[in-house]
Image (tube, rainbow, N blue to C red):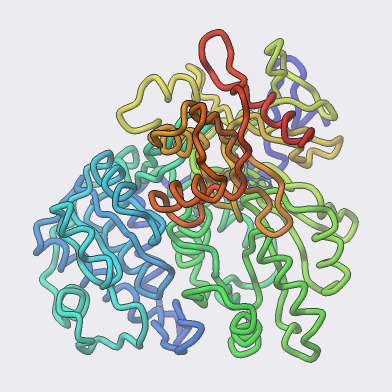
Length: 541
Ligand code: 4UU
C-alpha cells in the first residue's frame, strides 16, 4: 500500500489516477455539454406526468431563466433561495442562477417561517423560488418570491402562474451580459451544522462545483464501459440537499445523462417509473434502499432488468439491508457513497470489480482528494486498519462557513484539512469504512438535524429548565432525535406536550420523536453537553 498511504505524513492518497481540473469557469464546463447535439436525448423527465425537457431545450430554458432573473434585477453575487420539492424546473433555476454568477441557497420546502427567516437573513437572499402556497411566508418576510407550479407539463406555454411563465417562457430572451466569473467566486451557500452547534452557511465556490463534477460524477462514469448519455437515473433524493444537488442536478446533467425526477416518493410510482423509463441508475438513502428491496421481492418480471447500479449514501445503512438487496437483485452493481456538504458531497464511492466486491465499504477516495485518519485523543495519524477521525483535503473542500471565521477555524486547519467528525478506517486495500460519528448531528433518513437547534427550541418552553438532544436508533428512519428534558419542579408537562411544542416550530423531519424526563443533564465544567454520556443513558433506558 506504499503508493496510496504514506506512513511519514499519515496521508492517504486516492488510489485513482489524478484528474486535470479545468481552469476555465464553471459555466463553460456545462455549457459545452448543453450546447452539443444530443440527438433527442431527454435531460429531465417528470416521473408521473411524463413531461420531458430534451437536452435541446435545456440550454435555451436556462438562458431564459437567466434573462428573466436579470430583468428582475438579479446580478452577480446576489443570493437566490430555492425552497422547492423536486421538479424538472429545479435544475433550470439552478443553472439560471449560476449563469448570472448569482449565488444559490436551498432549503427543505417544509421549513417553517422562523427557519426560512433565519436562512434568508443569514445568506442575505433577496429572491426566492417556492410553491404557490408558500408565497405568503415570503410576503411576511418582505422577500420577493416566484411561485413555481408543482405539477403539469411545461412546454413554453403559459401555465397560469404569471411570474414563472414570464421568467422562463420568454421565447426570445434578451441576451444577458455574461459576467466574468472566477473559479474562487461563491456559487452556493448550503446549510450544515458541521461538527457542532447549529446550522451554518457552507460557502461553495465555482471551483468546488467543478471539482465535484469532474472528480466524482464524470470520473466515476469514465470507469464504466458504457456511455453516460445512455444512462437513465431515477432521482428521488431531494435536490435541495447536497447529495441531490451535486450529484443529480449539477453532475448528471453535465454528463448528458437522463434524469427522471420523482416529485414525491411513492414505492409503486418508483416501480412504474423504473419500468416505464428503463431506469439504469438509482440513488438511494437507507430507507429508500429498503423500500426498493421490498418492491423487488414482491414485483416480479422484467421491470428490474434495466437497472445497472444502485448507490446508497448520506446515512449509515445496515449490513442486513445491503445483503437483502444484493441477494434480491444480484445483477445490480451495489455501491455506497460517502460525502458531506462541507466537501461539496465529494468523498468516496464504491468501486466493484469482478475480483473485488466490497458492498459494506464506502469505496475508494475520489481522485485528487487526500485523507488522514486521526486519533482524536492523541492527534496521531493512523495507518490502514486503525480507526480514527477522517480528515479530508482537496479541491472539493468548502471555502469556509459564511461570516463565521471561528467555526471555520475549528473545522478546517491551516493546512486545509477538513475535520469530518466521522470515525472511519481504511482497509488494507484502501477502501474506506465508516464506523461511527464523533460529531453531534442526527441523520434522519439522510437529512441533518442539529441537536443544538432543537435544544434552543426546547428551553424556550416556560416549564423546561434544561434540555439535551441526541440520536436514538430507529428501524425506519435510521436515527431520530430524542430529547432529555429537565422540567420545572411541579410541572405537569407531558412527553406529548413537549413533542407538540417542538413540532410547531420546526420542519416535520426535525420533530423530536422521543422524550425522557430526567433530573439532570450531563454537562462539562464549561457547560457543554456531554453527548457521549447522553448516548450512554439511552442504552440504560
Ligand atoms: C454513513 O449526506 C451528505 C452527503 C451524502 C453523500 C454524498 C455523495 C452521499 C453519497 C455520495 O456519493 O451530506 P451531509 O452534509 O448532509 O452529511 C454528511 C454526513 C457525513 O459526515 C456522515 O456522517 O453524513 C454521513 N454520511 C454517511 N454515513 C454520509 N454518507 C454516509 C454513508 N454512510 N454512506
